[in-house]
Image 1 (tube, rainbow, N blue to C red):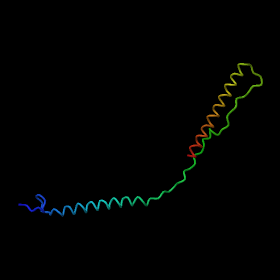
Image 2 (cartoon, helix red, strand yellow):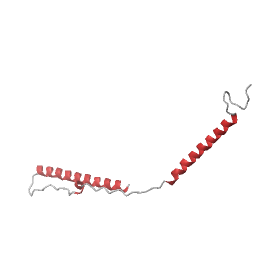
Image 3 (tube, rainbow, N blue to C red):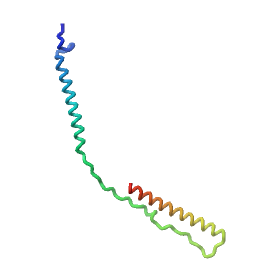
Image 4 (tube, rainbow, N blue to C red):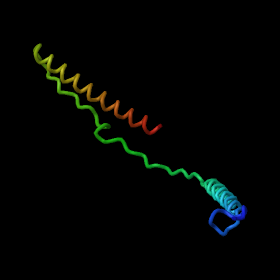
Length: 106
C-alpha cells in the first residue's frame, strides 16, 4: 500500500512539489515586477530636426508674357489664355509653399 504523502510512482513527498510550485510563482512574480520597474527609468530626449528648405522653383518669379503694342482680337484671346496660365502656375506655387509651411508647423 502506498503512503498518501507520496505522489504516484515518485519518491518525492507531495508537499515538496507544492512548495516548488509556490516558489516558482513567487519568482515569476518578482521577474514581472523587475521587468516593469526597469521601464520606469527611460528618459525622453528631443532632437531638433533640420529645416527642409523650400524648393527654388517655388520661389522664382512668375514670368509674365510679353504684351505687344498693337493687337487684334484673336491675339487678345491668346494673351488672356497665357495670362491665366501664368496666374494658375503662381497660385499652384503659393499653395505648395503653404503646404510646406503647414507641415513644418505640425
